[in-house]
Amino acid sequence: MMKIIIANWKMNPQTLREARNIFQGIKKTAKKLKKVETIICPPFAYISNLKPQIPNLKIGSQNVFYEERGAFTGEISVWMLKDLGVRYAIIGHSERRALGETNEMINKKIKTALKAGLKVIFCVGENERDFEDKYFNFIKNEIDEGLKGIPRKFFSPPTGGLIIAYEPVWAISSAKNAQPDTPESAFRMAVFIRRMLMPIIGSEPARKIPILYGGSVGPENVAGFLQDMQGALVGSKSLNPKDFGEILKIANGIK
Ligand code: 13P
Image 1 (cartoon, rainbow, N blue to C red):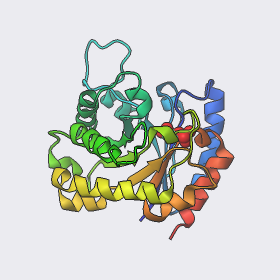
Image 2 (spheres, helix red, strand yellow; image 1 turned 120 degrees about the horizontal axis):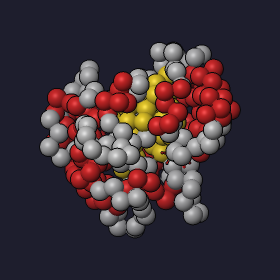
Image 3 (spheres, protein in one colour; image 1 turned 30 degrees about the vertical axis):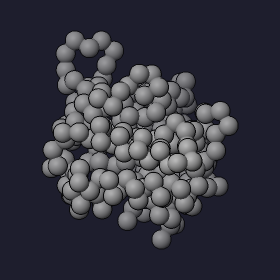
């Protein structure tokens, strides 16, 4: 199965010129790789200037709005994104949750994005670990609430549009004393997520949907996470074409 490697540029870089350079650098590597799907999620402002033009490179957005049109100053609709060639949308990133996005808003955003035919990269992750494994319940709740009331047809292969990104908040490189999770513990969560998805989205889709890891991923640790998981969501290292290119090559070489 193809690995999925996602670049989340967050609110970087500061100029279109830099964005183009990073994009071209990544594209040069992605072009040579057959076994990895690369998705670049730039800030909205750069999207129309970045053209993938190769089959295994796609553009994603870092957010969407939950209403389809109308008087919502400053928001961007799923249809506008589709029209610009966007195929994926990150929804529920912890940095948006920290700004006040609730599970209910995330649920509406996921529904609207799937309806428009965007593939959703649904982010979940606990703020901290505890020794009694209560954080598993926290993740279960994020998923239950996020996927509430979404018709199953949106999750069925071949058109099924859901990817889950498990991104523990404490592991994100911008967090104080950030440390990547271990591949074993991330995989334990992936198994839990897959099992809990069965009654929600159906057992066949739950078996098949990609579950990705995110949080301080770099060339030095990505291979471990990709052994048992289907991809990675990369923040700071995705702004460096050399590091990100290494990550892509490593992903491409995983059996
Ligand atoms: P880092 O790779 O910088 O830890 O960021 C992870 C992230 O938040 C990607 O969405």
